[in-house]
Length: 153
Image (cartoon, rainbow, N blue to C red; front, side, top):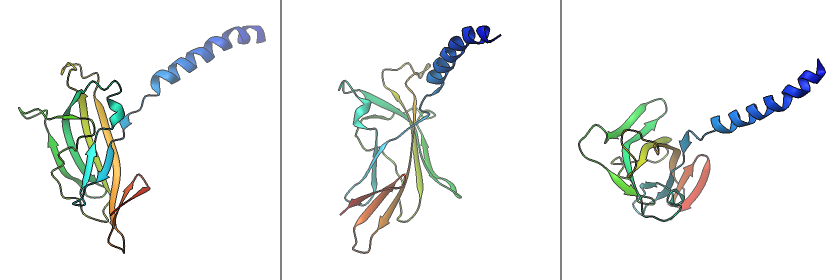
C-alpha cells in the first residue's frame, strides 16, 4: 500500500503545483496616485505597464469613486456611450469628482489595451486603490494610500 502511495505522490504534488500557479492570478491591479498642486489626486496607470515603451494606449471602460457605508459617489461608463476614452500610462485619468479631506475613498477603473480586440478583452484589468487626503496642522497635504503615508507641500 505504501509503495502505491509513493508512486502517486509525485503526480499529485505536480498537479497541485501547476493548479496553484494557474489559479494564482492577481485579480486587482494597483494604480499610481499622487497629489497635484490643487490638492486633487492624479490617478494613473503605472509606468511599468508599458514595459517595452511602445507608447501604447489604454481604453478606459469605466471610472468609479466609492465610499464605504455610502456607496458609489461618482461613476462614468465609457463602454455604454459612443465615445472612447484613451490614455497612456502615467497620464492623469479624468476623475471628474472633487475629493474632500479626511474621507476614505476607493477609486476604481477598468482598462484594456487599445490594440486588443474589443470582443475578447484579453488585456482587461481592474484597478483598485484605497486613499485618503489629510491636511496636517502645518497646512501641508498628506496622501494615505493603502495605509501608507506620502507628504506633499
